Length: 354
Image (cartoon, rainbow, N blue to C red; front, side, top):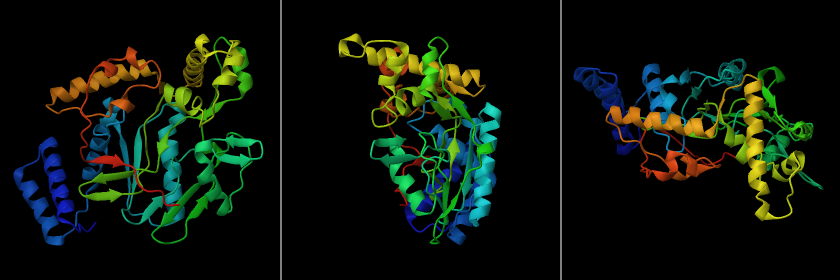
């Protein structure tokens, strides 16, 4: 990738220096590598450099509580692919590898910078439909669902229709690909005590694979680099299901567990929220799908902090994201200041392509 500014060139040098230091390479190696970049005006990471960069980007992700496992990230280097059908097959492979029959594996697939774009927010995501009776499905997906429909897709109109993948190569028209059912593992939500929860017919997909962020490494932006870890229970139970602007399930959950929701002072939302999150954790574990509760995740983050301190690295973080959306004061993170300093490599938001 051609480095067009001095800042990009400097970032390439800084990344190569980091790689050399942490991989315990020689000064001669670094000198030779920098000379290559200066001579050509391009930095083309090797697969090994790309793998290291993607893992360090996870280590530097200030909003992620699950960084203890950053070194386990599996990297698929697919920069050679520029055919939409081949890219689609690579994405299916990513889904299958990450799902792993429920034993979720962290992974990232990196496509050619400046050439490939995936329009989806996540590789797996439910559609949202505007109807005369309100929104059916995920309200957060309404705009993208309309885009898919304009491209010719027609869902079944249920609350849990898996959206297709939309892939664009360079300036060509985007192409739409349906994900076969056999590639999508989903979990039906039940409760260990309240049987009526099953009647809500809730479900969620096993793996959160973020596709809308750009991976920045060595002065290069990889706009198409979908990546995943596994779910923390509150992401589903306290946000996707509970937020009023998402599935808004707390009133139905309160009714299912038989509590009075007439007055705020009954703390019915709190009680429904706890039971909904218990249901999510119970259902994923019963189905054999990896998931972590927010208390365990906070303990894992503490181990990550200790490991980083042992390596002489300062841990950065976005406190407002690191505290879980349920019972945050029960975790050490709530009581601990943390510097929200942005380091690179990293994953960043980018403008939607539609």
